[in-house]
Image (cartoon, rainbow, N blue to C red; front, side):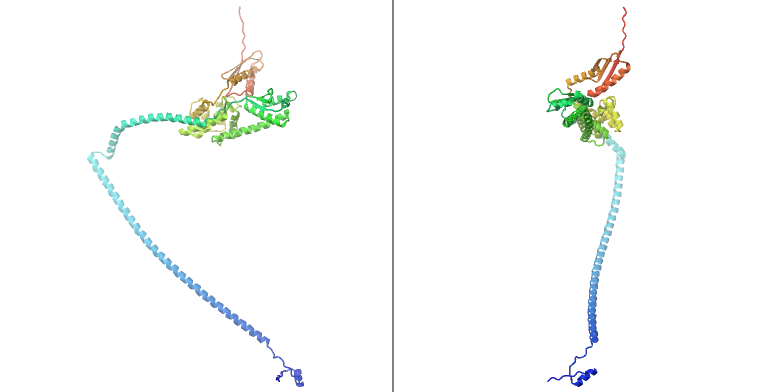
Length: 500
């Protein structure tokens, strides 16, 4: 039977129970504070051990790094010392070379001095032996050579001059032919009538309008004659190609619009005129760019664009100007003249032909216009001298004259329709005779002058002056001619008596 240990307690109640015979075993008393302190002490000891271990490992790593750094420094120092040794050796070698170079230069200078001294000594000996100085000997040798070669040189010069003349003549022909070949353009015939096709004859009735008011308004505003007699077509006749073109475009738009009224006619004519001016400016730009000119003032470009509708003896002015400019540039490049002066001179040589605000020949008008826009004097001289009105002052102005002559006189360049020529003379005379008081009118000098004879009893002196201006203005509207026309009104009063 197991022995039951009796618990010893200081509790009086418990003691009483024991006394009474209750033998109950009790657990031993536990000291928690002591156990907690013991656990804390153990944890602190373990942490201290770990920290110590880490510190020891860090010290070992630091020692290892320091050792590696010291090794690297020793290697670097050794490398630097080796480089210093090599550099010292190179410096020593350079010093040796420099010393050798200095010694060599000194030796060369000494030898040069010795050579000069020897050369002088030899020349002195030769002069004493020849009884003349060095310059005298040189002059004598040259004189002898000149005497021996004079005849040969003269012969060579004569042969060279002859060959140069022959070659220059052949070269000049080659240059002109090549320039004409590159500059030649196809002939463009001159037309004075524009034709518009119509599919409905009733359209002509709308064009005529009530009591002919539409066609009268159209002809008055455009300055062209409208012919409706031929079936299927409408013919617009006018010697001024710009007015004829404006009339053609306006009429085509009227037919598409269908509203043929005097007010509508005037509106369309204003619009078409603006468009035509824009087209002429663009044509002027194309002409300038085609010959390599890009810095002209806009007013001059706009005036050059009028060449699109301007003809001279059947040759279109744009075609003539472009052809002449290409020829002039080609010749200038061949002979070495100023290409830019020739280029501008050829481009602007006929610009006076489209100046309508003033009277005068196209050369004078062109010169005045170019001076107005500050063109270079050399270019102005080219324009002033391209018809030999004044003597040539430069090779460039002569080249402009040559290029103009080549372009105008080459076969096929210009064509004069004799029927049109006769018709133009008759039209000029008819315009003059249409005025009251005119007895007779004569057009001569190829239509460049008209003499109008008036009845002195019907026309006064003041009216004769006004008539000349009226005839001039009417010719400008109805007839297109190359150059200028001089109108002379003659009023002569004769009193004749016969004595018998």
